[in-house]
Length: 474
Image (cartoon, rainbow, N blue to C red; front, side):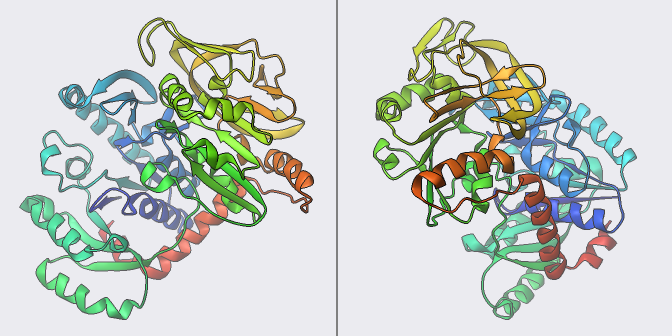
């Protein structure tokens, strides 16, 4: 059995709808697997085997109570510049390609996508397939295996999700439907109107008129709600939240990646978080985070142009660098092989640590766990470089030490997700609380929060969509 979730646009709610269906089917006793043939995101997830995949499919796997596997998202595109993306197939990088080059290469992958999908179908009771962008992108329909092309390969019925919060929801639905070919229209069996605010009764006349215009049933109106985990694209990821207590500032690098590293702070009652683009915005911060980057040298140059380098060196609070941010805090970065920019490129770092980073052609992908200042941590590494001369490592993994620290206020590590550990997050935040005279608190592990959020997601969708109708579609 299978069902496909497509959308009228990006960020309309496809991923969360698919996650909700995975949770519902799992809770109803079925073995469920998510699948998205191609994803584009600067944020990625690392599997236990050390493969890279989209975070949305990882969340959907957790919703289905299974371990994320790379076959759930065979193709991942990670933008490296405004014109190129790193193409990752079955968890491993193939090449950096421009759009034209990729669309020439793409047809070679279609048969492999079909084979991968058919293997999944054999192993699970239900497959929840997610599309990308919109099926009505008529300029991209040739050789499509992401939207209606995927629906055809899987011979799947389709649920179309539309975002009413953006306005023009009926035009979104009608326009998408009418731009499809007749055979494609037949696959759309239901519409979900997402992110609705207000009285649903006021929407009813519009729904009835829409169902007269196109022969597709509106099977649910899902209310607007905040789901506080695993944003994977910049359209939804950069959200500030203001509370009284501790101020966290994340430097919004032009090529910022893996900004899900900061999702956990949303669940602290006394922590505010903001993404900043100017050094003067650091003034009221207690903790400044220098995040990961898809192009570390380019973003380091941007930091210097903005004056962040001297501001970071002179900052009196805590500065925490993660992955690319950690590399930038060292003395130098050397791109010997042209991994990010030109071969032989040397760039002087911010100089907090005495470290030197050498970019390598082989990407390190690994799930890790260990301790930091005797606190349990877990997370993952995903980077192209090695860093040496770290004088004071504070992260102890099973087979090695990682990171560097200085003056008990400058920290750097390669471990993405280090703050997801409730123990370590408590350690850092309580250090700040003591300094500010605030009451110490105990933080919760993000894994426990995620399960609670997924159960909430399931309840919201059960209450607002016609699940019995979806089972008929299966």
